[in-house]
Length: 481
Image (cartoon, rainbow, N blue to C red; front, side, top):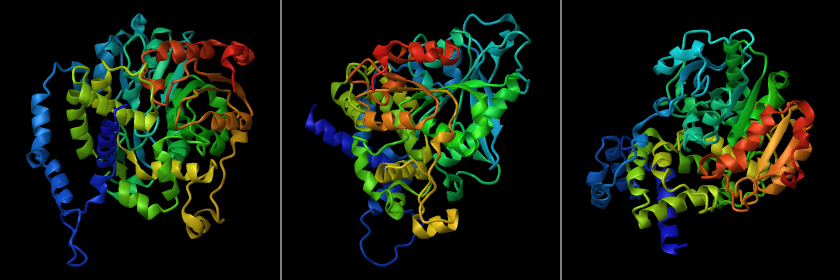
């Protein structure tokens, strides 16, 4: 891999993630008369907010102007528009949590060969659904709730083609598919009592997502459909939050028929990603907040330009810029060029990443540093005030009694095999642990890989269709620890 490209990729990644939050606000007066290194940066980001960033950096304007390629129309569509475009019905539902966050659920109630009684959903707009949606007597359509990872959203599940994306495959197979959006992402950026401009809005990690978001979503879905249980499929943080939910509120285990954990992010001390180097700062909260911002990672004004510029730059016809884009993704999720879908790259980068809280990222870094799956670490004094003890409480995985099936890969630089095996041994009802049959399969391949349908999704669907302990009889070749 070209070392110059890797260097440029690293600089771009650090600039996009950290630099916007390191600079001081233009409204702040300097504490003294010393030179402020970030004054020029502050001017740049303020001009970006006003849509004038390319006036500051003429080279960026030149690239944007000269790298004109045929644009995939999907880059301009949101999640509901994408779902409709590919022939599926879609509904948008609103969920309220006990701590006043307002979440969005996206629902694909049936597949392309839809039931006549649901025909009206095909023309459903993006407004909230007010009808009950209760399934007809005798229909018993199984439910699949999909939950995304960190800095992601429901749209990440449909970044593959219609015949390869898991929600579409499940809907065509007869499932009632629901896709969650965790608090703080682009589709769930609301709270009854405060706006995202308040730092208090972002005072949450995946602990709160597990404690509040997942139970509220499960209750809403079951009340809407009239069923008593659902299937849950989580990727990365979507698994983390699930295990938090089931350990803190064990009564919800009875509402989960099966749980599929794709790249479970629980025991992270063996992380191989370059992000691990930040783990040593995970307990130095002020440093992390100064770097990433006391609130959201990748604010809207940054994502706006990322999502506008990246699709044009990251196309197959421009080798240099495409290699930069690929290396940014490799730096985060791992290296697997055989599964990198260059054709879909502009669409992926037009929608991902999404906003998320700095505290969620710090909580993961704390897990890497401590080697423990436990609640947020506020420091000794803060922990005593919060928990009444010096160290954060450990999440009790022994309370996660819902049937769990794990999917993992050797080349996952975020969730290494040893951590996955440790999780498997701690869960009281882990039905199976399946190794992906691709030695180069990475953390982000679960969503974007060209062969994700063959390597992962078809096996997921096989597990969901099996009853009780039958899932334990999956072929031995896949059960390698």
